[in-house]
Length: 178
Image 1 (cartoon, rainbow, N blue to C red):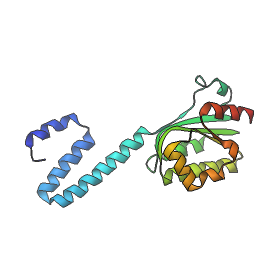
Image 2 (image 1 turned 90 degrees about the vertical axis):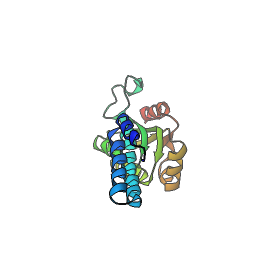
Image 3 (image 1 turned 60 degrees about the vertical axis):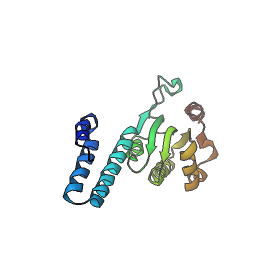
Image 4 (image 1 turned 120 degrees about the vertical axis):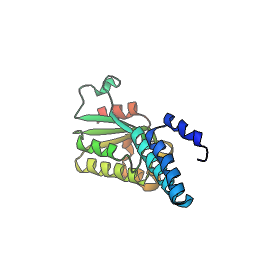
């Protein structure tokens, strides 16, 4: 922050980072270092949450990749989730609630790297909604931290034994037999 020529290098970074650095510098000069560091940490936190949530996504599994799903849409739907399911990205699962299938909903969590308590509550709410509407929920690819979170939250204990599969292909095969 004390080297003036470093401000020229700011143009290579994204706008949120530029704003964070400039605001921390200005707050250091105008107020004091303590306030500047607090505001800088807050800006960095907000930027981080935004970036991580923008990396998370949810896609309907394509029938061209999973031939068993051909002519099943609306009856059996499979969603693949990528990234993290946390308070900044729970809208991903809320979108699924709007388009529930009539018989079986498959959720592939193989590419989910992190789930927090808000994400687990949203998954639990989705499972409850499926139960109310008599839709079988199948969870696929639950591993590592998401598995541990599901176990600690008690979610796994609420699922029937035939609702947890190691991958999407085996989950789809079970859904077709349902």
